[in-house]
Image (cartoon, rainbow, N blue to C red):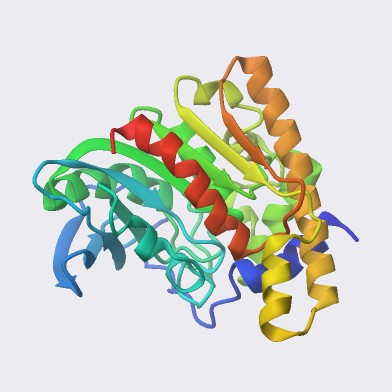
Length: 332
């Protein structure tokens, strides 16, 4: 089975297709934002659970930012930008519905900011508007438009980290390389950091096509110049000086599968096998990233399990494991 086919199978868990994406605005995709992002409204669900609705000039639409506020707001606190997977948080395959993220951060002194949207976009700036996936300028949105607004509205300390899983694990690492002055820490959970290798490019092609998009609208000709620019392994030295956490499983079933079997009494072996093979490929990507980081003299913390498939239970564990590394980096 090819890595592309495996990637396709994994997305049923990491982020199924969204029925209708935003259509492309009329103006050209290459235009840059000429005005800052603006806050349209705040919805406070609880004292610690907010939603900020922010207008993005680069994408010409309003985007929700789900925010978990710090336990103690008596002084400025840092920000963790936590990205959802291929579904962009617009489906049930998201941090809030699949993990204990709300409870976990309830006693932590950090603002956790998660954008809703960006399905199948790799959270990057696309070169062209896509007929199905619309305009995607997520690098601009995440690294230029919202940080000043988030800092102002939430009264932050100005220190940031970013983390993601599966598709967005690749994105988190790439964004940390593209905006080195913005993020002091980065965490990747079960991601493949390659985009310019044959396997990495094929994975990205499958992810985008599952959302109905045309991958060359993202970075141009496959494995061309822009694909190389996004390839974290090829640009490993750009992570120097940051707190880096990378996790992956071996692909073998483990504690998560055992708990699921004990709860349901049914082992879904085809799913477990497929997700295991996917994670085994992620494991290989992680080894290549580790080699590249070592050669570049970049120190990182690795959590490579002897078991673990490509699924949420392990990403919840990885988030917990990475927090001490990220918290130290941003002073949380």
